[in-house]
Amino acid sequence: LGDHIETVTLTHADLDGGGKLVEVNPLRKVPAFVTDNGLKLFESFVILSYLEDRFGDGRFILANAEDRALVQLFVRIHDIYISSPNCTQPNFSHTQGCMYLDPYPTKYTPERRTMPDPVVRASKLKEIYERLCWLEQNIQSDYMVGDSITHADITWYPTCIFMEILLPCVFGWAPIFHEKDHFPRLTRWFETCSSNEHFASVRDDISGVLTSQQRDGRFDNVRKVALDNPDIKWKYI
Image (tube, rainbow, N blue to C red):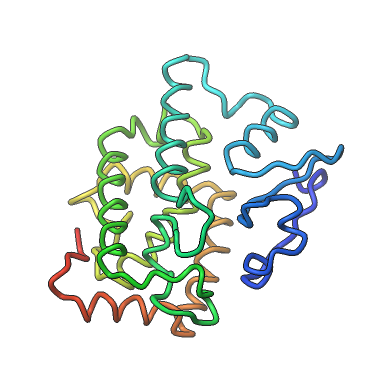
């Protein structure tokens, strides 16, 4: 779709300051999308569905009604319980933020996005583990639903790259998506997706940023929260 869509990359300052992003998405979140006739869209699944309707050939839409419903369930589980705080007010943060949002303001985390309470952070980490367990039980094949890529895979894969890098780095987990004792189905799924050139490109982009930030010490404060609270459970595998 590179010939049809212009991509604009935003910085932390763009997200926190608002600017043009607020004109498209009043929630000040990415992704945000403007169609060629000026319709402003946000929420990942809405944008994915629009692009599929506008440019797709139906390859991501399964023929069976039950399979289509399961794809939507996988997406909803991700969008509600992992990637969204379901509140735009200060100090409400998404579940996945437990892996990287600082306990106090830094150049990476403004005041309104901090996560100061270690119990809240640990609870969100447990949520990640429990949702991964659900995925492990419900993945059907090499892909999440059926034998081909769907919106479920497209939705979960980028977030799982964060987990792949940060859960071992910050909380000492086993190398998730690279071990078969705890999550063998998820590992097979991750390997399958990573073998696709488009998924692999996304992985390179995200892991490159996270690795650079790791060298810059971005995640040290979160790691210290875990070390300073040994009575709280941080490691699940």
